[in-house]
Image 1: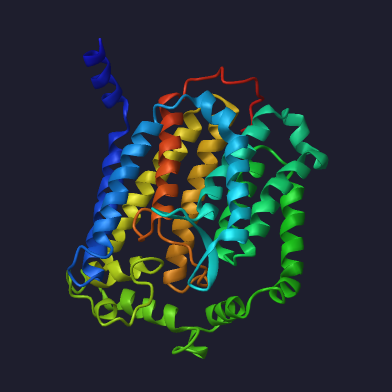
Image 2 (image 1 turned 120 degrees about the horizontal axis):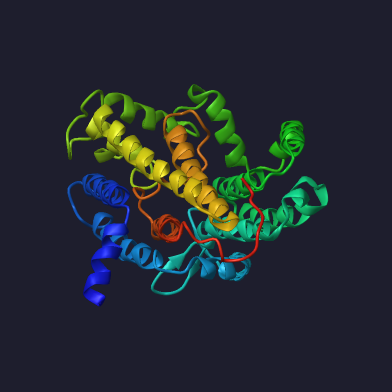
Length: 374
């Protein structure tokens, strides 16, 4: 019976998505190998081990019952929030920011996990909230607190990019749950009005990044160096690139953060427009699958979670690509599944694992009484 069950489970997996995931991860390892001058260490080897471990973890997560994610949503949110508090007290400093918990064998960045926890927590909240209640302002106080607390803690680190990611994931859930459109119109107007005031609370380097985004040529050797070198790398790649292991901006160390935030520029220089199209096609397949999971889900929690996680993945990809091309300020958001980093890779694979779990149980309607949300 076991032998007959295993093939059925394997056959039920979304193999196009999984093969795309493997192709994207493998391509990322090739870029890291080249970025290190044709050496597996220090980046490609470590990232390959992480990718393999977290890929297996995602497959294992696909077997987790949907009801477990519903029950674990609040405890997971609370645990990650406590870890964010721990970062402020005991956190390790790196790159001028206090963002990590040093656990000995791994340096964990709790703010990355909050990108998942905020979606789960809000999806559970709206799963049990009657549709009519989502139209009332009072019912949005709890979501505002759930979003605001981790945002404030992450801003203290400081990490504007991750704080915006958390806010985006939370706002998407509130919108999809059916909150009044007037809330978003009013909120958008308030944000625009608050921009002049908010700028005064930003750190000096954050203000410089915004100014450089508006005028990259104002300081090409200083605050605008990252964007300038990134655009040079992307533009010099042309149609087919300079060739594998033949990048100059990366190998001559002109391009900063070539293995993390600016890995897309590293890739584009060597693989050109063809490489960029390949990466974009891979992300399009992943995002298309994620949205299809949300549309096929039969209960509010699953729909909201799948849509929220997929929109969060879209936000990561969109902001990183806009950043390296000079269409957005540099905010330090890595490119999912390609950029070097353990916490970011783990977060992306947890996201995939939860989507796999929802996809496997998309016909489930009995995880709890909840109204239809969208």
